[in-house]
Amino acid sequence: MSKHIEKLKKQLVEVAEVVNSFQSESVQVRIIDRLLDVMIESDRVDTDGAELFLKKGRRIRSDDENFGIPGRKKPGATKILNQLLGTDFFDISRSISAIATYCKDQFDSDFKTSELSGILLKLANENKLRRERSNENNRFEYIKA
Image 1 (cartoon, rainbow, N blue to C red):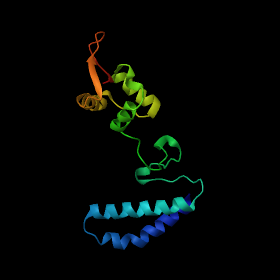
Image 2: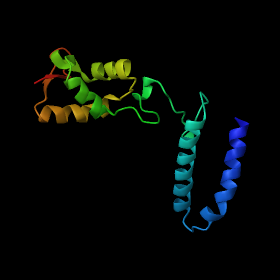
Image 3: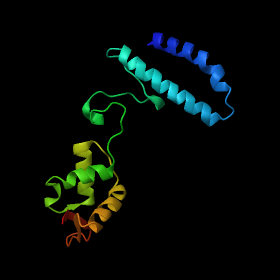
Image 4: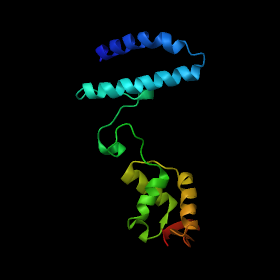
């Protein structure tokens, strides 16, 4: 690992003069950011099994935790809810908390109910879901329209 750090230091010294010639700090940061991305991409091809890091210190995962695409974020609430519409998940009525729990268990996505409520309301307005108030607890539940 120290071999990689020494290589990185040497490369940064080489580009420091060019980067520092820009007056804007935000431009400097963007240039370094892009350079690091390119360097990481080229190192990924060169290394076998070594841990690689993206900007902000996040490790690239090769498993399906990021849905098979290294460096990608997990899908958002809208994407997951639209995927669930294509399944039989909404064949029975579900509360927002039940939907959030299912997303956490099945997709490893920890959504707050407040994140889901607006998307569910939109899906209800688009007649993809029906929004009904539960008689038991006076809360909304969602079912396929």
